Length: 260
Image (tube, rainbow, N blue to C red; front, side, top):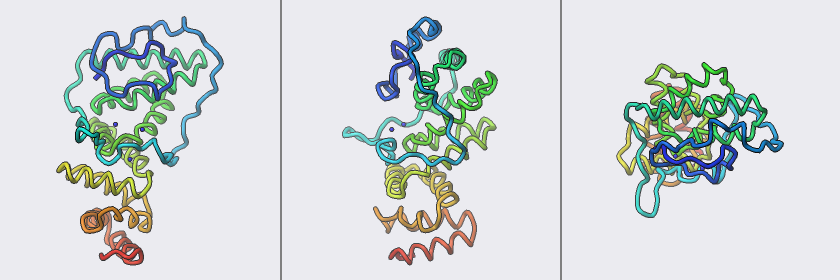
């Protein structure tokens, strides 16, 4: 399962895929955002918020899900530290920009901004959720949760943890449910990457959501990359859900040709 602040795109309407997802901090992060109404406003097709339960698209959207590794080694770990004033100002500026873009009917640009915000550090998520709802942008928060479901597995779990710790457990659960909608092979690879890094709690959180959301037959397909390692982990997660789910998974694994 395409996981800081710093210089921003020169204009809010730059395509999301052209933006850097991790930026060094700096005061110019949102240069020009506050006077976004002065930019050209060509027609933009509205982007509707995804319906609840919508499955995450497959393919390049999940590149790096198996631990966000690069040729130089594992990618940067999710940041977990208290917010500072720069984080708070960035959040306020982003919400103000979204309010203005929505008011002007510039839905495409608003969506691009949400895509970028979905790649923020995990510790910014609770404040962003609160500010979006305070501004009446609950639908934008739902869109951001859906976009965040494509994050690499470690960052997905970190963001869900941050929301749960801030009293937004339902949002954290929704993010995980949507995040495990990725193909079975990618779930297996993500678990292998987390396990290799010694991130056993994240493995447990990801598999717990996975065995709750996916059918036993789908879950069984996720162990193909390394059955010796993945079968016990998957069965442990299923046992934590219920005895019935555990035995259903045992049966599915055996039917798929794996020893359980």
